[in-house]
Amino acid sequence: MNILKIAHRGAKAYEPENTLKAFQKALELNSDGIELDVHLSADQQIIVIHDETIDRTTNGKGLVNTFSLSELKSFLIDGKYQISTLNEVFDLVDKKCLINIELKGLGTPSKVVQLIEQYISEKNWNYNHFIISSFDWNMLEETSNLNPNIPIGVLTEENLDTALAFAEKIKAKAIHPDFQLLNTENTKRIQEKGFLVLPWTVNSTEDIQKVKSYKVDGIISDNPDKI
Ligand code: G3P
Ligand code: CA
Image (cartoon, rainbow, N blue to C red; front, side, top):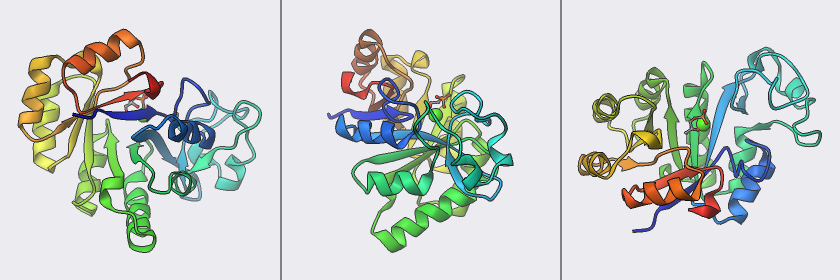
């Protein structure tokens, strides 16, 4: 079985996280997928950024949702890269790999569903190009209610059984567990219920080998080339 290599926040080990440069690097490394995080700007654009503030990753300070897109574009990541929108990432990826969109910010479910539907109806993408995940399961339920065809991955760092029960309820496609929760037995149990197992964030060669021995379906890693 081929294991899916998913580049966490782009190929974060090599380029600044969640930038177009990092997603380009992920494509160059032949990743099967990229993972990214989204928040909304003040003018309701979908912004690809992990934290709710721009403090850690840019030369600015403040909450993402208090700036317009054009204001956000004026800040720099590592002195040279701009913050990206989800549309820009879709256009860069252009159906070349799976896109795992992690919903972080308030209001992201409806905006992301709208954008996915637009790319499917206007640009010949299909649902298999996407998987939406979140630690906020209310957002996953909202996504599934808005469009039950969109594949969903249930993120968990705590309890696999609770995640499994929720995945069954919303007919998710995958469980995305903290890799430290997994072993061979529970991986098999999740797969027998019909879900993919896509653990994160597995970076060291040793951990990658260990998780591979559980026969997971894919791995989310800062260095997908090591998988
Ligand atoms: O999607 C898995 C992983 O990205 C979740 O944690 O903090 O890196 O978004 P975080
Ligand atoms: Ca993430």
